[in-house]
Length: 224
Image (cartoon, rainbow, N blue to C red):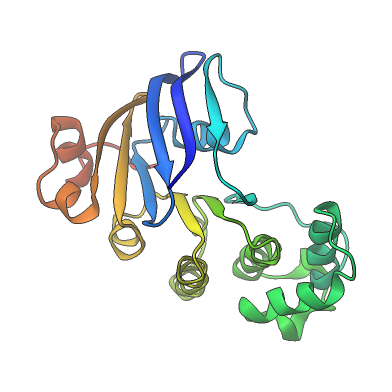
């Protein structure tokens, strides 16, 4: 089932004309060097940016959500942050599902703690709880563990796996090649705003189809 269709989508000089479908099911990892356009491509997919040309067509039946590398925390408790997201989505009696979402990410014990005093890893899990509460059909993750230590990274990866197990389609940009192998089913490789490869994860790493991807895997291009 196709969730998103990108039809000759371009954005200024950052993303070159791209046509692709994003389907339900397997997790998709977006890889590329610094400045390749990964974050811009995800924002186009999610509708946060309007393409300079072409169009992005949403063909899903449910909600989308997006979690950023540095999520914005409201000046209120962890629980109230999730309640607010649910109320924006039109959910009545939001406190109970908000608490359920906090339990899913291991933050129920911090429900009344001000969100802005949480650690970086806890804030990222709170951002994931806000997404979890919406039960999205498609979840975009933009470098969700880039600034976290290994322990916090493992916790975030566990939550991402829970989303996947619950049937949410994951599209994630990451600079971490090991993480791409652990969490991804397919790779979209972006180079200077162009999609050069799209392949199953193991195929991409074992036998990249382009010299640019091979150099990136070997560490001969800067990571992003």
